Image (cartoon, rainbow, N blue to C red):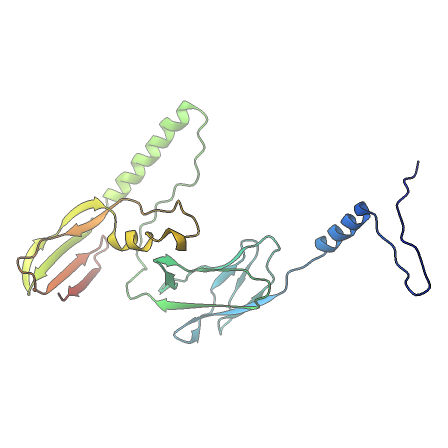
Length: 239
């Protein structure tokens, strides 16, 4: 049995008809399925100079910048951001202490520019420990993974720890006291929940904090920190 649909009256001046709802939906879906994202272009620079060989991705495809820092990419329709893989020796821009190595995709936007700054510190020596999504289904899984964690901890301890000393008005005052807490700058950056994309984001406890008590309220303090690889960093605080 065929179903009849209502059709508008036809006249010589106005030839029109009403599509059945099911057919209208089908045509709309066909149109959307044939939609394609436009090709976008942008540049990766540092101090006005293009950076070559920087990997850029939309999470689905990867491209590399040319010798002038330029490249093009047609993002996947499901992609939400354009990301860059920050090369060694450089740092991405920051907003509220969050590295901005990504830009949200806007289909009305054609150019995406990333401006990097040179890292003032030596980042060629790093210790990176990675544990990737372990799956536990049996008790022996926990036993085995505990050995992996112990091995990682032992590896970390095999490197010398940070050594942080301080001076007051040029006089050596010894090592600073290490303690656990929240970084004050991080707490301030994450205190305004309205500016955060997710309200549940909050600073984590860290034991990488150091403190000391100066003898005078107007003295000049110099902090001298030595990392596990022997690199020395110095900062002076004028009060």
